[in-house]
Image (cartoon, rainbow, N blue to C red; front, side, top):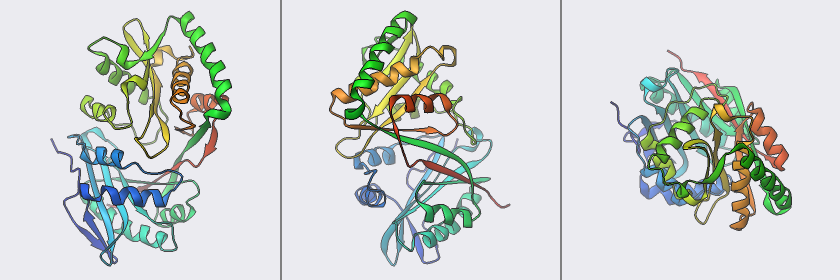
Length: 333
C-alpha cells in the first residue's frame, strides 16, 4: 500500500519559481505568511505543526515553500486519498501567495508546475479553490481552465449579541431531548470503551449525506484519531447525542490555542434520527459552553446546498462571511 509523503521530497522548478520541500522548520514562517494573507483568519502555529507531523498511509500529502530569487514568497501543496479510495482520481492543488499585483501571475506559474506533477502521479481531476472576495485568485484559476463547481457558505455568530436567544434555544432543546429520550453529553463523560469507534462510524456515515461533487473518501479510525488529538480539540468540549448505547450525533468546536478563530469543526447526526432536533440541541450546547468559556465569536462553514444546516444557522443568528469556492479542471491526457 502506498505511504503518505507528509513533506514533499522532490524540488520542483519553473517560471522563476522553486518549490522547495517544506520541513517543520518552515511552520513559523507559514503561520506568519497565512496570517498576513488573510488577517481575518489568523493561522495557528500549533495546529499547522500538528497536521504537518501527522501521517496517514491512505493519503498522499506533499508540501512546498515556494521561493523566488532565493526568498520565500508562497506555499504550495498536493493532496489526495490513495487512488483505490478515490474513483474520480481527484487531487487538490494549492498555491498561495501574498495579496499583491503579482499574485495572479504567480498562481498561474505555480499551476504550470503543479499540474504536470499531479498528472504524473495519476490525477484525472484537478481541484483548486479560493475565498469569496479574492477576485484575482478566482480570475487566475478561471483563466487557467478551471470551472466553478460549488460554493460553501461561511458564517460568524456574535455570542454577546445573541447570548439571550441562544440560551432560550438551549433551554427548549434540552426540554425536547428529554421528551425524545436522547442523552446530550460530552464524550469524556461516557464510559463505553467503544465510544470513539462508534463516534468514528457515525461521522463516516453522516458525512456521506453532505452535498458534494467529489465523493468523500472513507477515513480510517487512525486518521480520525489524529483529528481528535489536534491542539484545538478537547474531549470535555466534544458534544455527542446518545440513544441508548448508540452514538447518533455530534458537534464540536475547535479552540486553537492562543491564536485563531473558534470554528465548528463538525456537526452531524445519524440518518435514522434526523428531524428530531438533535443537531440543533448539539449546536446549542457547543455555543452555550463557548460563551461560558469567554468566547466572543464562533465561525462555521457549510456546503451551499445543505439547506437544513443553513436554515439553522440563520435561525441562530449567524451572519455571512466569505465562503470557499471550489473549482475543477479535467487533467489533459
